[in-house]
Amino acid sequence: MYHILDRLVNYCFPILGKITESIDAIEDVIFAKAIPETVQKISVIRHDLISFRRVIHPQITVIEMLEREEYPFFKEDQEAYFGDIADHTRKIWDGLEDSKEVVDGLVDTSNWLTSHRIQEVMRILTIFMSIIMPVEVIASLEGSNLIPEPWLHNPLLFALCFLIQVGIVVAMLVFLRRRRWI
Image (cartoon, rainbow, N blue to C red; front, side, top):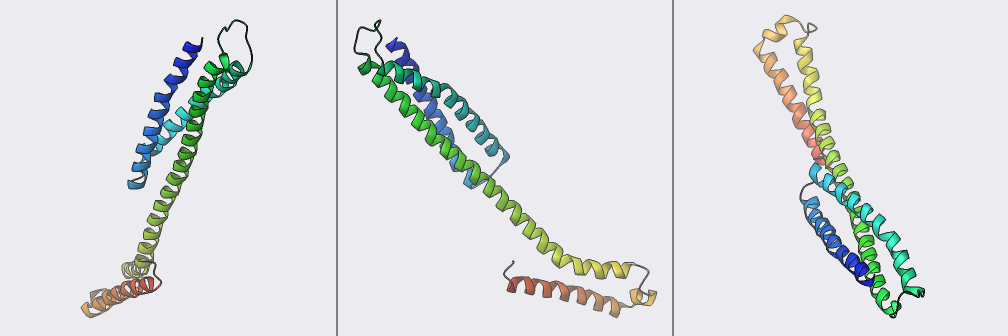
């Protein structure tokens, strides 16, 4: 029985090692670029960790019970044998706990990076719209029937309107630059 349990517990170490390698690989990728595949990989590793923890947790109790209590059908010193297995099981559990904390941190980091990127896009779009909106208002007034026809056919008035639009864009850029928004 000892040999069976020992092999089963020792079989868990390579599985834990692969999970740790996957976590390390995702840590390297997450800061380079947050892509949907990275979020999916984090979710898969999180699922694997939860499943592995569900398997290991009940084993700890059983192996510790085998280590502590005396059973007549075991002839050898069971504390020495099962103590080794219990130590290995605790090491696996500690590794799973560490991996869980790292994955939770990766999830938080991924969420923060995604939120930060969305905020950057929204900031750029807001700045763009702040610059373009006054120009759009003037252009829409020119295109509507509110302005008399001679205004549209006079090249000097058209140039003046164009210069006003360019001036508004430059003024908005200067204003936004002084506010350190761009």
